[in-house]
Length: 355
Image 1: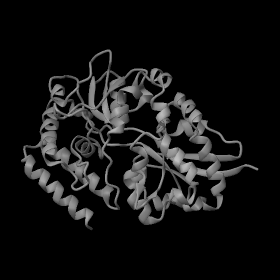
Image 2: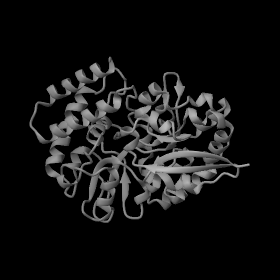
Image 3: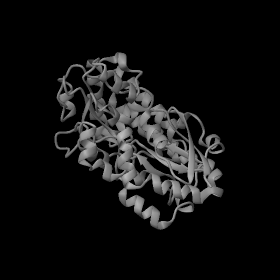
Image 4: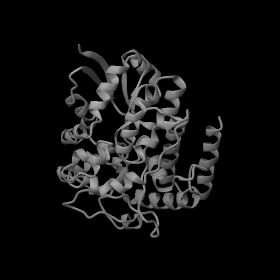
């Protein structure tokens, strides 16, 4: 007997094709789609009442947990399954779904901000200072992405503050200079729109944007540019998605377990990369065959994924993230003192964090 489940994913082929292609002999999942931004604009508690499985992003975990919209993965899957999946996931994707002593989703898709460019028109910059010498540059500043650029460049990895102050001031200075030399007509484009702009030949570079291997037929990628010459590598802010189980599915937990075991099988993940999936499995990112099929995307960006900044995930973070991005956009276009601006950002973050 086939068990029926209902799931919700996002509406880019990278988000839905792998899930629609994969089938299980005992479990059938009907997958609906919505814009990726919808997981932030629509309360997860509303979605949880309609779906058994949700493809979510980790910054919204705090709100999801507070609303009781998702189950701890320890309540659904065995310790052996979880240990196996953790060992196969690209760091830090697994850690990004850990909060308050529990895991709340399983890494399904891995991404971070890297440099994307037209290989027929350009060569990638190694450092942000190189970007200032380039033409054909666009920045991804729509929605939350202006703020996420700043976090990728200057997020405090110690967790004591939101920003590393010295890096934040330097990052904003460079971003302001690049912005004033860039094509600002792309200001409303999200990462998908940026990739499509480059595919159309209307720009040559975006130095920091969430990468989509799906566009490997035309584009190429490189590691995130370094902010300082002494940096060992460049950094981005972790993206990607995870697979969460809702309380609605609790009565079908055996079916959920069977389905997820099949979906996260290494061979399955390797096969699903062929339809445009961007797996969170290390085996996919380290596969020479997958890398070649998608124009070197995986080898070019793996180290940036591994060193990515993981955002705060407390309840209230999403609202602050939007405010941060709006503030960064304003700073790119004005001449406000950046030292004072970073101090204000930090003060406001502390207020939100402390409730």
